[in-house]
Length: 146
Image 1 (cartoon, one colour):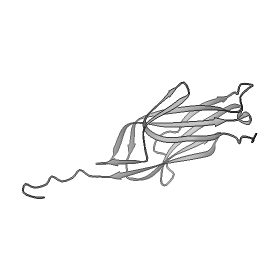
Image 2: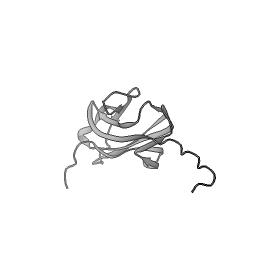
Image 3: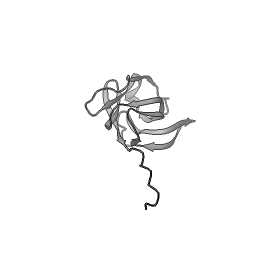
Image 4: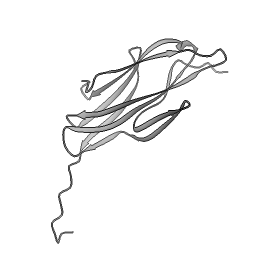
């Protein structure tokens, strides 16, 4: 049997919503671009969904940290910290844990490229890209125009 490597991220995504149903991760509306009609742009609600696999070498207490940053690396919201305790049953070769972080009223002051960086014990493991574009409302078509 092949040996398993340390912690592995199976899923790291921004989505409209996510649920964890008996350790089955359900995603709704994964996205990587937000179209805003004006600035500041407020995204009312979204979720970060993570599915991580741990092996025996990962057992112990860890800190999962999420940083939302702009293209210059400046944070756009406070970091999100989650304690993670990993314990494998004696008969398990690995365990998988789902993490869902709901974000309300996510604010963008400028368009551009952003990322949600995923760290475990201060080591980067993934980066979820997000593009924010300005898409102003269409001008009304004058009567008689095509």
